[in-house]
Length: 114
Length: 112
Image 1 (cartoon, one colour):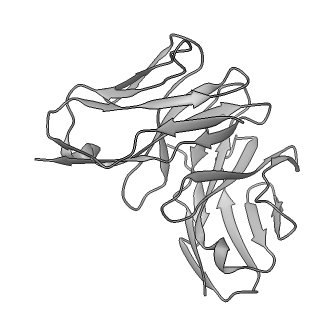
Image 2: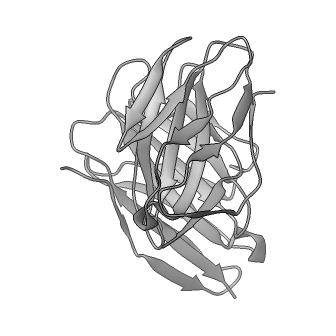
């Protein structure tokens, strides 16, 4: 069964550094998402992406964050200048066209900011 | 705003016991409802879904019914197994982008 893949599984970065989290969505999916889960807290929506542009973003997704689909297969989340509070598990998800279709998630990238 | 409320965990059961994990929601529109499961060290996997009132989603012996009158989507299983030990997330999707709004998750621990 096709799946969403995320790399790396664990990223350790110094505060203030840029980090890029990578995702390869399922190939025929058209909608892409990033979520994060701070340890012990609920999974939170960050951003959705469709037709090569952001379709919705949350309050968390400020100017430090950006997303890109550079080559038709990868979907990346960049944090420009990381803060301690960015430490979390980041999940990528994708889904096909159509209402009520479920999102399929990757295994996540654990981001640790030192 | 839209939100999901789940019962606090952990839920601790013996094998073959009956499971209920409560989930209620608040939504301005007409959401779709989902249960996702997260096994240790893994990502979120869709367990089941329901897209309209009175729909019953089911998978792997788990069931949940979309109850509009009580705004609930409780997860049930008649006989749990040790392998069901995981964290279960109730979620709803709304709006044009279908973003998911999650509950806090409920950890289930099943002992032999």
